[in-house]
Amino acid sequence: MRHTPSFELTDPEEVARLIRENPWATIVSSTSNGLVASHYPVLIDDSAPEGTLAIVSHVGRPDEKLHEWGEHEVLVVIQGPHGYISPGWYDPSPAVPTWNFVTAHLYGVPELLGPEENLRVLEQLVDHFEDRMPEPRRMRGTLENSEYADRISAGTVGFRLPVTRFVAKLKMSQNRPDETVARIVSELEGEGPYASADLAREVRRANQGVFDGEV
Image (cartoon, one colour):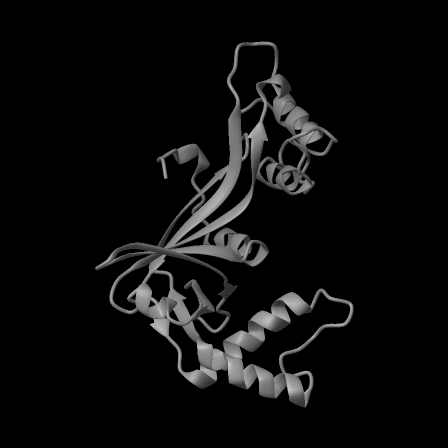
């Protein structure tokens, strides 16, 4: 990513929040056969030592071989809310449009999990997303579900990625005057073609001084 100090996101806790709220990840490897990219949901590994960041998930076979996991560093891209910001939302001065976004690039060498730990991660993934449902369907909710999960898990490989470094950027109009930021949020919370409640919430979070700490 372009180096822009005013938009750098360096707080690991904020990066962890970004991952929790936007778990659909792009995983990129530079392999002996060229670049390989896959897309999977990921979770924060809560068992990671304090002060460190790690994620867990699984891939479908043979992705772990295509990525040559365990042999080199991989890049995991997490993308949060983003969207078009019209210059018409600024003051009358000449301006160009821009794009607000929050994203993180995570780097590390994946560790492949054994079958039992892979099953635990699969169960965590299911629970994480099913918790919001009115009637959650648990992986171990019934004997039939449990037996089915045991069978299909053989087609997956779990992994843990200890994040050795990350580069993250939060560009949410922090370089604009307060009145312009307020106008941008008003437009994002409106009904126009580029309205986005999720992006408006992130602009508020990044500019809390404009909104008296309101998020």
